[in-house]
Amino acid sequence: MRFNTRAVHAGQAPDPTTGAIMTPIYQTSTYVQEAPGKHKGYDYSRTANPTRTALEANLAALEDARFGVAFSSGCAAANTVMNLLQQGDHVVAGNDLYGGTYRLFTKVYARYGIEFTFVDSTRPEALEQAFRPNTRLLWLETPSNPLLRVTDIAAAARLARARGARVVVDNTFATPYLQTPLALGADFVVHSTTKYLGGHSDVVGGAILLNDEETAQRLHFFQNAVGGVPGPQDCWLVLRGTKTLGVRMERHCANAARIAGWLAEHPRVAHVNYPGLASHPGHEIVKRQMRAGGGMISLEVKGTLEQSVRFVCATKLFALAESLGGVESLLEHPASMTHASIPREERMKAGLSDGLIRLSVGIEDVDDLIADLEGGFRAAFGG
Ligand SMILES: *Cc1c(COP(=O)(O)O)cnc(C)c1O
Image 1 (tube, helix red, strand yellow):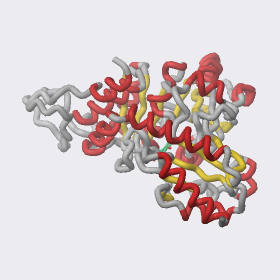
Image 2 (cartoon, helix red, strand yellow):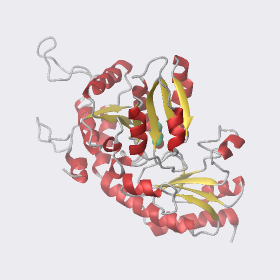
Image 3 (tube, protein in one colour):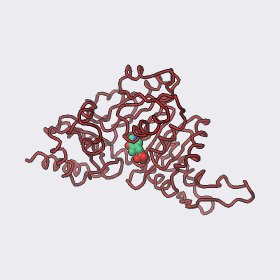
Image 4 (cartoon, helix red, strand yellow):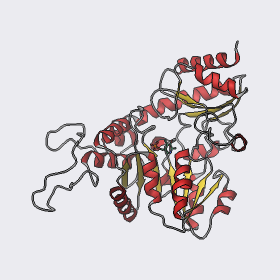
């Protein structure tokens, strides 16, 4: 079955007891047993819940994976991949990871004797040099946040495999509609389903998708042992979201491509980062590994920090908020919001200038979005 058919149907047979076409929200903590240990596959909802089972099957189908494991957040999903490691193991990771993932690595797992090397994963030589004999995992995010840098997943996976390390791709920004990392050689896909998969900014969730059965069993063990499971209502919301993932992504991508092209010509814009632009340094890789450029854009305005702040406060449709991937457009200013804790000098070195603004382009009418951004430029610069 093709993508949109899987999105609507995978994991979701009509309810056997009533025929309900939508998977019920099994709002129950426990299940009645016929005799001790004799039950219908469910005994306690931390261990398993039918709404979650449906979601796990649906997400696995979208990533062309054999197994899915769902969590209460993207961070809980990332944490559970890390549960597979032990003291003395080494992880190579991209140097512009999602902040919460970086925090999990440096503030939680580093304390348990796991070592990390952060590199520019878009540079194969840098990646290669980062591996050590005890490297167990390569952790990639592509496109990255907020600079939308692109890493060649297939090339990075070949490198890692040759050195005995497994590869994780956080596919939150691209979604399986645009990019399927397992098919490119990755071992794990991690998602924050909070973003495009849920798609409506009304739920927090996460997932791991993979093909190796023994590892899937270990992840289910940690899911149950650590307990970061999503409730049935949240599973149901993500299931409702994934049905429209393909049509939403088409619109996110079309809108973002129009806006990126418009911004690239704008006299107040110094630079636009968008994987769908031919001028993007990773565009050749994008053409190979992504269906389209995605819904995220970052731009550098020609102005001061104060002018950028005026810009993000002035737009009406683009709401000033962290997070991304919902049907409504959002924008944020990394220097004063998501990346404010990084000292200015370090921030500049990492390419996160005072004028950098990140857009999560929604599915509204694109001409209204462009007019809204023009209003932001007028508020910031006059005229
Ligand atoms: C949001 C996000 C996460 C963390 O997910 P939560 O659901 O917020 O815990 C991880 N990776 C990326 C790329 C994200 O955007």
